[in-house]
Length: 205
Image (cartoon, rainbow, N blue to C red):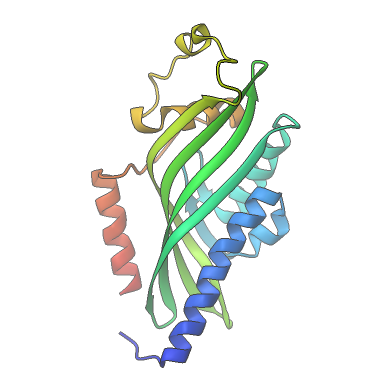
């Protein structure tokens, strides 16, 4: 690996972490211009509902958020970041719990999704930006915002069979919000996760 001083390592890791955090804040706040600046122009993103370029992700996120109920809420909560640095390349891995409030069919729900995000950063023209984002999904929840306010018959009527059991509520919510079925999913403990981690290690090295 390329030899860096402690000060250079600390500075690089701070800038990388700040960029990943900022991207989540811009996503939640609907700052689409700011979100786009967190990614290199040729970057790609894979999530539970999207697989494509960062520019396309920004545009489709804007369209999806515009279709939400006025009282809907969203927060990506980040924790436990780990950064692997090698010269002008780095992998920033961190946990995300996505909290979303949604109104569906007249009922208010609280959704939670647990996942791991891996942002591959590269230093270009003096700036660390994301060139690849991969998300590894673990589990999800769907609860009434007010306990007891949603009849059991509503849950019984849901067809969740098309979705991976661990994140069926997350995928159902996305389908209702964006009309997008999950594609290229990476689930925790799956062969796809192992392959993704090999790609990350090879890219950083």
